Length: 92
Image (tube, rainbow, N blue to C red; front, side):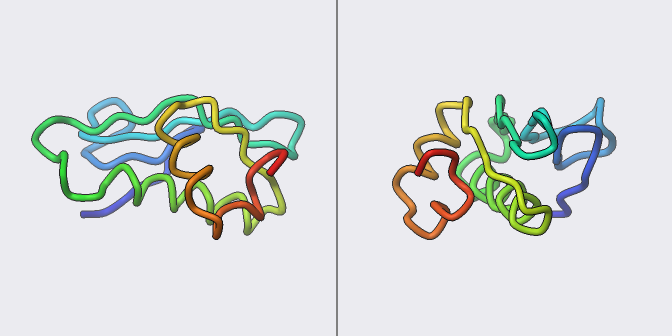
């Protein structure tokens, strides 16, 4: 399974508009990635894909010196529970 980068998103699928899983974000002021949506098609659920998408956004934030504001409930839950992500969690 290949995770691809699109415009303000990472996804699994054929293209940005034809995907089976995605995580979307907005780049706010060049300092904050507001992660607002995560989706995994039912055919792919249970394989850890949503977490892999979160990890890719976390890696992006670290590489670019940004923090993440997790508006998406799934991302917020993952990041609040995983201490290793708090270096890029806004207001951690």
